[in-house]
Structure formats: C-alpha cells, structure tokens
Image (cartoon, rainbow, N blue to C red; front, side, top):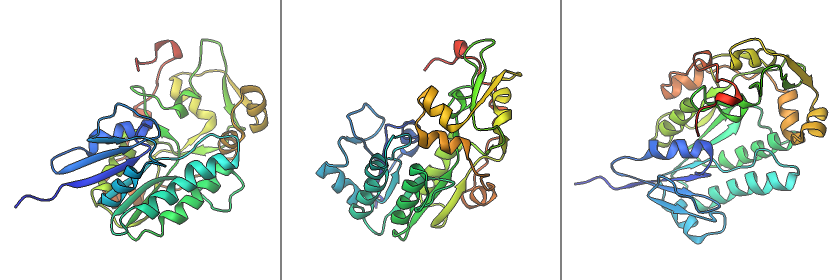
Length: 286
C-alpha cells in the first residue's frame, strides 16, 4: 500500500533561504507548497500568492504535515511593519495549521518579546506564538553567510567596494558574530521538516566566532581600510534603518553551536573555508 503524500508548506518561500530550501524539500511522496505575497516562478508543486489573505493558504496550512515559516520583516522603519509582517503572520500560521503538524521557524539569537529593538521584539513575540504548537522547532540564527559562491547581505556589508575605499563597520568593532553558512541552515530546516530533532528552541549558529573588526580582512582576503561608525551615523549618513544599525552596533555574543549540531546531525561549515568573496567588481554572476 503506498504511503500517503506529505504536504510541506513554506511561507516566505521567495526569500533567499526559501528559494534554497524548496528544491531540497522535494522528493517522492512529498508535495511542496510555496506561500508568497506576490506571484513567483518557484520550484514548488503549488504557489499560493497573497498568502496572508488567500483562503487557499488556510487550506494548505490545515492540510500540511509540516510548515516551515520563513515569512517576516527584517529592516523596517516602524513597529507596525514588524508587528504586521512578523507577529501577525506567525499568528496566522499558528491559528490555521493542523495542531498536530510540525512547525519549523527561523528566529534570531537575541529574540525577546520585551526587547527595545523592534526586530528583536517581533521575533520574541513570534516565538511565543510558535511555542504554543506542541511539535514546534525554533532555530535562532545569527547572520547568514553564503561564502564566495553566493555571498549574503551580511558578507557584502564588509566587502570593499573598490581599492582604497574603506569598509564601513557599524559599531566599534568589538562586537562578536557567529554567522551560519546558508546551506547548513537549509539542511537544518530540511531535517526538522522531515521530523528529525525534538521540539524546542535551538541556537543555529556557526562554529566560528568573529570580531566585527576582523570581518573586513577575512571576507576580502587581505587587509583593507576600515571606518567605524555609530548606529546613529549609519542611519543618518548611509540610510541604514535604525533597527538594523542597532542590531549590528550592539550585537550580543551568541552562544555555541554544539547542541543544534548534535540534535539534528549537522556538520557545520567553518566560514573561513568559504572566504574571501572577492571585490564588488568580480562578484559571481547572480
């Protein structure tokens, strides 16, 4: 007797992580449904647009045996955008899905429902909603990194634009980061969506810890001039949203990665092996 088809729903499926995840979820006996805000050509069995309003999205969430929730807001200028884009969308998922299904989501290492930073606060409030689902897995990530083949926005911030041009570092350089390789984050999502690991909250960070002051040299593969700016200067001069500038300037030391690696059988990538990424003039074709 054939096994029934499993449906896996992915919100925010047109995000960088979502596009990497969709083909990894596909396989015999699995039906992958992408839930997006605007219509996209994606490697999924079905794409549902305007998912936060579409009745079909509610049906998909109710049918799914696993939901990977990636939808959210990262860099906005007001709390309402974070509340609507991160907290409200999470509430919609939790209320619509089968309560016996597995819910997997990406959060942030400093998530705190009472945080002063709007991004941190929205992620904390979203975590509270996710935790009401019995079989839920929350991966708290630091920054995502793609390495030389597909550098992520975090890495591009530290890439030198041209010879002699200083790399602008937000903060005083003493902040410590544990970025995780994008392919490792996708692997964790695939395993969790497939039922691996116990429900709970895990710190999905890389095995290496880096000072912000060291990142320009590591990412460019050579010493480069650096200009340190405060969060306020970054917002005023470079138009970086204050919430994002504050995250970068006041970043807390993230915890280690041993627990998540053990729980999901991950072999986490040392990012030093994926750098340098090259200058803006010789970036890989996208």
